[in-house]
Length: 174
Image 1 (spheres, rainbow, N blue to C red):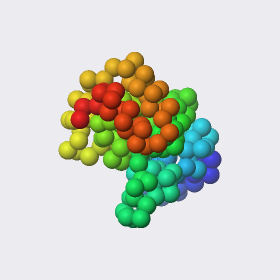
Image 2: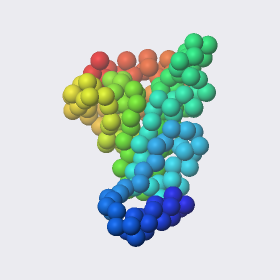
Image 3: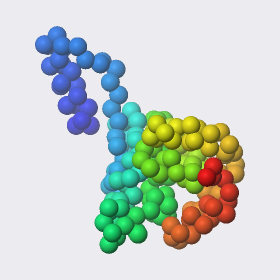
Image 4: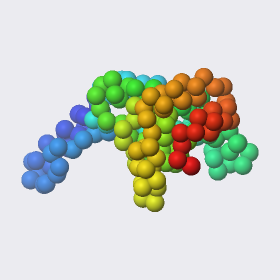
């Protein structure tokens, strides 16, 4: 991997100049584009971890800028395409045995927690004011219930249908 080669070259340069650096540096990949999702299995061969940026990923998958009033209605992390991208990325990371976390607003959404847990996510990066609520919400969930709800949610065709399914499922801490 070209990135690893560049990092090793920089490390050799730092060694030659006797400059301190973190020798056990881990190299991760931000998964924020459909292209990164589609090759997540390949990226996982070279990465030490993944971080899924749900805000950008949602915007790029849906081709919708949440700040643009003309298309912001299309922006939803609950769209089946976005959910499948997230699930595929988490699965690729778990298959290769590397950690995967989620960051962005979706990671703290009470209705998203059962899905992320079912998909195999075990690490969250959320705003400080959301940490306790997310932690409490995760503690109240049971994997089998999350799996059943995720199966139903992923069979829906639109974001609105997914959200309705999740609300009916009643597993969120909202």
